[in-house]
Length: 529
Image (tube, rainbow, N blue to C red):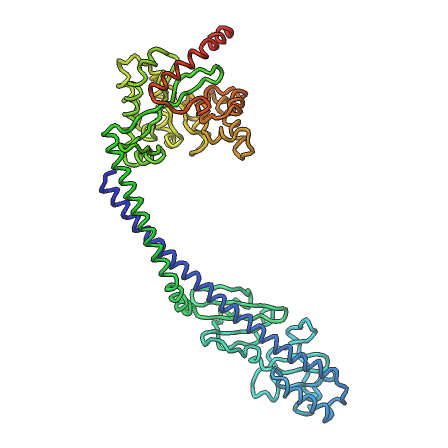
């Protein structure tokens, strides 16, 4: 990846980092506007419901009072009593008295009995019967609502139920709980109103916002055009906008800082390769049964000219992204051969493991480099092991071809850090591997209550079933070593044995372990014969 391309990508990332907070603030403003609009409609629906309940309660109270009177039916005093109730009850326009289902008199005076009770449309929890669309004689053409209790009924203007002061763009309606429309304040969309009567809910469609509220006796509906969202959204947007700008500036600045740091790290890595700032250390690999050091894993390190160390988890991914990893692999191969030629030629049982990048497991390029560098050194191919993480096996077919070629040349191939990447049994079943290295996180879980603790044993069993030998990474305690011994794990590496060592220190460590445990190993081999 060229510096120009990297700059373009980083600039795009910075721009995206600036846009995302503003887009997020816009989205939050819209969501807040929707929430506020819905809350306002819901509050209005509740107030409409309360208004309907008050009108009903007033009429019911008037009828209950009339039921308790013992005046002579339809006498002047009785009619006067009904008139008084109409005057003092704002929701009632007329009270009527019935005998055998026929009206005998009303608050207007005597009746000829020609008006009969109709069939109720709804019965309330109080036992009152509700009849819609009643046409009384003295109602000036208005359709009324009849509330009947005992021998009395009260005629009510349905408009009382939605007689509520509300915003001009709101449309109110009141209905029975089963969806029978009683009254509405201004005309709502017929299709939407019918839908809400059948299925009371709150929300919005492409034209309107709507909310409903329901009690045992009434269903309130409020509808408003979606246009009211615009004004609320604008207000919310300008409320969140300063925060969005601050976040955008912060994110863009952070992205630019990270970009410069990454570019600086990339440039430093290029210079580091040129100045030989990268070096190799060797993590000893121990044969657990005997304690002998059988080899090491070659690990790349980077110390800048100012003496600061750069962590491998920072510069290795950068090297893979920028195409520098091949140069690093070649450097490791050259350094291993130069550092370990004498040891490997003198001890044919020893080996050095070299880590290959995912690209090398696809292209096979590293195999050619190793073959050319080993020529004439006296080091056997079998003494150079190859390790790759699971990312290197994503392309199964190409990885199989490279592994097959590597094993044909005599190299052992291991899957590194098993269990923390794209762990998939097909890698073990379909690839001709020799070894499996258990990641340190699973070794740390040994003897603990961690959820991953049982996984370690399953990985070991799986490897042995497939005929792979096992290398445990990150062994740090005697308890872990005892567990690995009990599971007959062949090899281990970790600070319990030694930290990663420089060339001379590793050679000294290897010779010391060989001298210390070599006799025990020979005795064991003789006993097995």
